[in-house]
Every structure is written in C-alpha cells, then in structure tokens.
Amino acid sequence: MDKITDALAVLKKGQPVIVVDNEDRENEGDLIALGENITPETVNFMVTNASRVAVCTNGTRTSRKIWFTANG
Image (cartoon, rainbow, N blue to C red):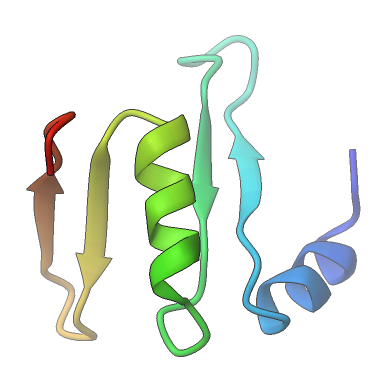
C-alpha cells in the first residue's frame, strides 16, 4: 500500500489513484482523481475500467452521478 503523500503526488499529476475499503467493510476500491487536473482520457479510462459511474462533487456537499453506457 502506498502512503497518502505518494497518492497525493500522483493526484497532482492528473492521474487517478485506487482507494480501497477495509476488508471487513465492503472490500472494494474506487478510482479517484482531482477535477482540476482531470483530462478526457482519464475520465474515459476510469469509466471504461471501473463501474461506469462517475461521481462529481461541486463543492457544496452535493454530488451528481453519471451512468455511462457501453455505446456512449
């Protein structure tokens, strides 16, 4: 497991990181990226290789879920 400081450095480069839950909880992982550095290619990678759900926060403690289909 990488340290949080390592993950922050990766995020600042515009790359996603995988954050995993405790094995005693859901035992799953999420791809996370910073919105200010994200590129269309990174979004495409994330939705193609994950659950096809993107959650975008807008800074007001609300979020929007966007479901992607296989055909766009």
